Each structure stands twice: as C-alpha cells, then as structure tokens.
Image 1: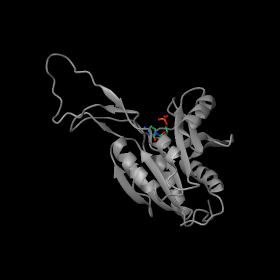
Image 2: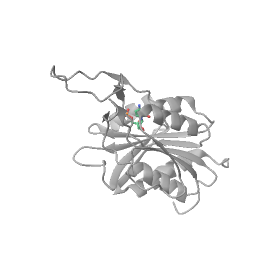
Image 3: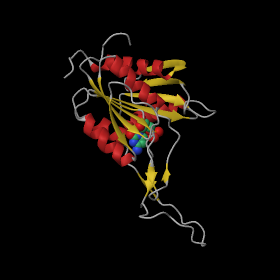
Image 4: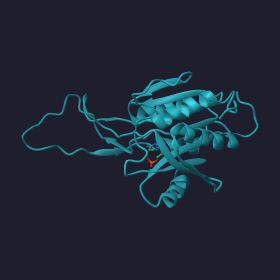
Length: 225
Ligand code: C5P
C-alpha cells in the first residue's frame, strides 16, 4: 500500500470486542485485542481513505488520522456502524461482536443470595455484517467480514460468506494461541466471486494491506466522494 489508491474513499472499520452488560459492573466479553482492526484503520489512512473506526473496548492508541467512535455493546456498535456506513464506500467488520447478550441488565450489582447462582438467559444480537451486506447503503459499496474458525476453515468460511452476503470474508484459523492478541496473523480471504486469496503468516499490517488491495480492486474506477 505505497500508493493512495483509497484517496477520496470513505471507509468504516469496526475493531475490538463487544461487552454485554449483566449488571453495572459485570459483562460477557471476548478476547479480541483490536490489533487487526486498528491495523486496518491505520493502513487505510496511509492509503488516503477517510476512516471511521468504530472501536469496542480496545486499549490501544488511536491511529493518527482516523475518526474514532468508541462503543461498548453490540447494539451500540450496530448504531455507530450503520450510521457511518450510510456514507461509506467500504465497510470492514473486524470487531468480535457478541452473538448473544443477557436478556436483562440488572439495575444493581447482582448479589449472592445463598440459594445458588441465578441462571443467565441470553437473547440473540442482530447480525450487523449480514444487515449491512443486505442493505448496501450505497450502490457498489463493498462489505468485508472476518471469521475465526477452528476447523474445516474453508468449508465453514464459504458457508459463512454465503450466509452473511458480504463481498469478502477474511478467515482466520484460531486455537492454539493463534490470532487473538498476537501481533501476527494468517488468513485466507474468500470472495463472493469464488476467489480465495491466501495471506501468509505475518504482521497484521501486512494482512490489512492485502485486505485493502482486495477491497480497492472491487471498488471500481469511480472517484470517491
Ligand atoms: O458469525 P460470526 O460471529 O462468526 O461472524 C463474524 C463476522 O460477523 C465478523 O466480521 C463480525 O464483525 C460480524 N458479526 C456481526 N454481528 C454479529 C456477529 C458477528 O457483524 N452479531
């Protein structure tokens, strides 16, 4: 990404991991560090894009030049991403969004009662990636998602790409300490056009640049806004 091939383009990147509140002090969360999403934002800025970074619970310095929108929960992330997507040429969903959230948030801290723990009932969160892919706020908008798979990586990836309806799905193999919280990453990027692009093990910036290459190819010749 040594050229400004995203100049004039508006892109949205989601990063980090959502937290789903149980009570004022507790939440259900995940181990996403935000490193991959922040690398995507930084590389997009370097390539000339105007970047909105919807950031869920990330303890990293803000990438210079990106417009950072902090969020906590999946529902907040949805609002922020949908709002920014209305103006965007491309949306890359790198955040680990909780599939489920507790059905109620206790008003006060949940106490031990002596009667044993109360069960936690979960409800499903909206699938933001599927929603954006189905809506396409702008004609020709490119939508990319991430998927972490532990086994049958390609098969599951193809299935997920179809289900979500996105243009690109970056599939990471996880487990055995891979991907989460590490500086390096490896992936295969599946395209709705049937393409599969392998990205060798290396820094998350390198993977980010390859993802933007694939997005830029699909953006077409039209100038940005
Ligand atoms: O279904 P799964 O969680 O494996 O899909 C991962 C991809 O979908 C990621 O790009 C993630 O940001 C996105 N996602 C979403 N909304 C959800 C769950 C996941 O946009 N509720």
